[in-house]
Image (cartoon, rainbow, N blue to C red; front, side, top):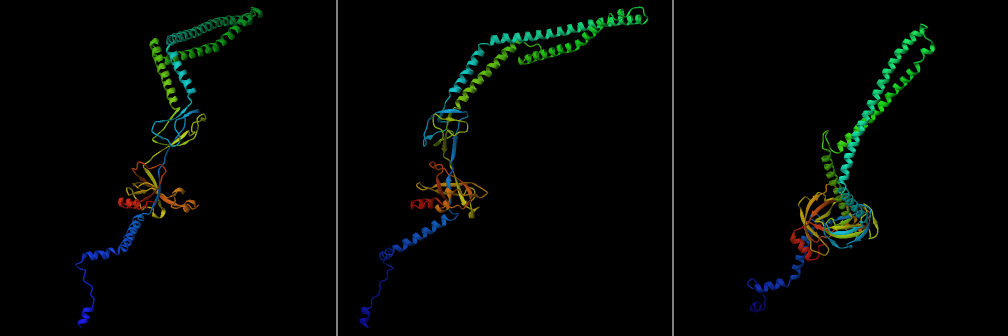
Length: 394
């Protein structure tokens, strides 16, 4: 019995030997590592598949610069890839023709300003001529009326005499020759009096036309019936001066349109017309692509309605850290997904139409390139950083 007690081995209790317990746990670290990896993978899966992964791209804002008039491209001031700012000159058109037009309008203005005295005399002469023409037409009408009245009175007297002669001829007191002696004169007077009506009508029409011309002249000078002609002419010349000055300014503004300026900050993406070539209105001389803070994402059709306004997540990029995004618009319909944004290479090359709900995200990322492709996940900042740290951002 004593021998059995001496040879039996019994493991000492480790309750009080913490250092040995930790050594035993440390010896099993691969198990714990794999458990942690599995948990991490499960979390990644859960967070990434909550709403699925959305393919998207940064919105592209392209400004196509075209001339307003047909002209030859004189100079392209930038090249493809150059960064430009809003209002920066990017191209110049040939201004030879418009320069000549500006010089012509300026010369017209100078000549007009130097000829106002002659214009005033000319206008006064027109007023006098119009008044004289009216007076002449009135005199002619009065003369014709007087002549008509005179001949009408003479005709009446001759007809009275002819009536007496006819009575004498019927009584055979005078011969037929004597009876017909006044008839030619009476017929001539009747024809003459009949001709006064169209003549007086013509003179009356001329008078009305000259009065209208006088009224038009009066109105062009903005004169009342008793207006001061010289004052009216001064106002007229002043107004014409302002009109000519405005024409000069308009031509100068038109000349400014021959200089093409960038309509926003961005990068020159394309040059469509080279120097020396002629560009017409609508021809794209060059294009500028401006950055945008909006990303267009496509939520798979089977997950339609899963996203709502103000939902937040992160847009993962190939070579740069993810950027925070927020839903700012949700399209009500379903649209085809562009081939470049389909989830796989096989899907991009497939002829099948993939459909999705368009979602507009907003971000404040300053370095988001126009058209840049991203993968959007609705995840937290912690998981986004963790995915990026382990290289799982795509």
